[in-house]
Image (cartoon, helix red, strand yellow):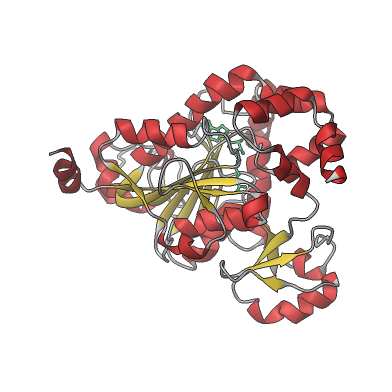
Length: 399
Ligand SMILES: C[S@@+](CC[C@H](N)C(=O)[O-])C[C@H]1O[C@@H](n2cnc3c(N)ncnc32)[C@H](O)[C@@H]1O
């Protein structure tokens, strides 16, 4: 108890007021040292458990409610082990794994991750796809997306993926397999995409460096920029115009993505390990990054709503979208989802069937879920699953 009080006393008054104003129990932050770390084994390495245990010198405890996941004590580091360096496992919190599982990805799906970097969830999505389908990752931050590319390459998951530097609120590129939905491109003089290589021609590197100097985030013209694509991602052989084309609004219902993850930018207040880092970074950084009133109250919530709106727009009929954040405030979660549902008669909030066995609570809006350190022994995460109804179903609902 004394230890708990002294931990809370370290927090600046402004953070404690932020928690109070959002109805959040500060005691969740006292669990930071006791919640385990989680790893997911790459498919194919299920029989390497003993080998990995001997390398990291501790037992891998199977997470019974989440296939492929194991927990290890919080102080154990995996980065120096051969198993990690050789790509047999990656670190990903079990709550994040639950959010990806809720999408119900099947091999052959075309999946979109609208806030993809640094990419642990995208890795899991690609693992679930196997050798069919495609994954498209979008992020607004160039350096974070570059880390995502490194991760995909390390884990041999690049083959069917595309990474776009773009604003997820307006991103419009459909999956590449659906060229038949579009008019063929007639400009035969334009160059086609060749096999992706990390070695860029001198002229291109110079242009990129210039663009980076001006802005470390989005390309100057607001157009998406593809920074990576795999051999079987459907990009090779396309012309720029074909790749970056958008569809007529109604066509996304037929030619859009099967599954969309909107793991939205947020204040990260539920990520207790992240909050703990501010002890080293300084509490003024926390105030600037997490508590800035405009960010938390207005601009962040509208960014989240716009990401959700656009993710849903790009979803196929009968497709599934998962909205998640690692914030635990209502403003960034239930309020965003409620507002979105109120304005979309074709969106239906879904029960996450498999969650019956998950150690989480219901959110304020029924069918939504909340993971938190005290209930779940994971990092904090809000998860909502939404289905796009077919036109006929929408009409029935409206009547
Ligand atoms: C919670 S993180 C995503 C974590 C990621 N899904 C993972 O599992 O590693 C949120 C991400 O949203 C990105 N972001 C912020 N605004 C964005 C926007 N308008 N469009 C796309 N991405 C955005 C941030 O750069 C950040 O990488």
